[in-house]
Length: 314
Image 1: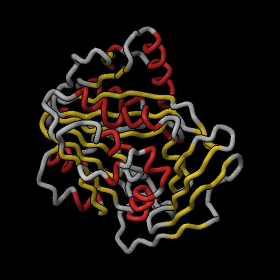
Image 2: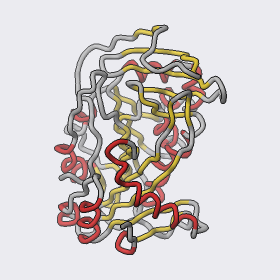
Image 3: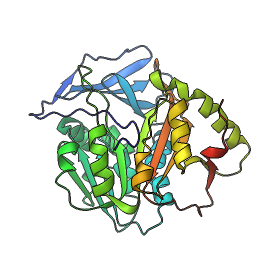
C-alpha cells in the first residue's frame, strides 16, 4: 500500500568504521566544523554557525537538525501524534532517528516502552559520546528506558510482533553515493502489522525540489493559520474524494487503498517554516504527515483541523 510517498531508505549491511577527520564534505563558509565522521552509510558533520553559535548536524551534506529548531520539529514528530491518539498510549516505535531527538521527546512520556531502531552504529556512538549531542538530546541514547537497536529497520519490521501506538519515521532518503531505494513495498506491512488500531504514524519531508508544487497549499495553510488562535493547525484528509483530489494536484501520492482497507482512516498534514540556517545552509518548509486507521482525537484544544474538502488551492 502506498499510503504516502514515504521515505527512501538506505538498506545495507556491514561493519561500521568510525573515522573522525578534519576534512568535510560541506561548505565551510560561515561554519566551524566541529566533527566530521564517515560510516558505511553516510557522512556525518557537526558544525557551528560562526554568527549565531547555533549548532547543526549534517548527514550526507544535508542539514538534519539545528539547535534553534529541534524542539519545534521533533515536537511535531512525536508529541503531536500523541495528541491525536484516541487510545491510551502504551508504546512508541522510532524508525531511524539516529540524532537522538525523537527519542528525547518520547522519553518525556512516563511509563512507556520505547523502541528505537537506527542502522548506523557510527551515528549512534557519536550521539552517545559527544558532549554537544548529549546535552541537546538530554542524553537520550544513554537512558536505560530506551530500547535502542543498531540494525536495519526494514529487517526489524518483519521480525517485530508487537503493535505500536505511535510510529515515527525519521530515516534518510539517500546513501553516501546518492543511491535511492524506494520504501513503498513496506508500507502495507507496517500499517497492517505494526500500527495499533487507534495508533498514529508520522512521516516528515521537506518541500524543496520536487515538492515545491505544494507551495499553493502552503500559502493557503498560512492564511488559515492567521485566522486562528490555536497553537497547531492541521489539514485533514478523510474522504475518498479528498484522497483523489490531493493526488491530482500534488506530487506526494496518497493511495486511496488506505481508505478502502480502513474506511475510517484519516491523514493529517501540518506545515512549518523552521526559519533557521547554519552557514550557507538553511532549513526549508517541512511537511508532517499523520496517518491513522481510525479517526483522530479532535478534542485537543491546541489543534485546529481544516477539512481538505473545504480548501480551495487553485
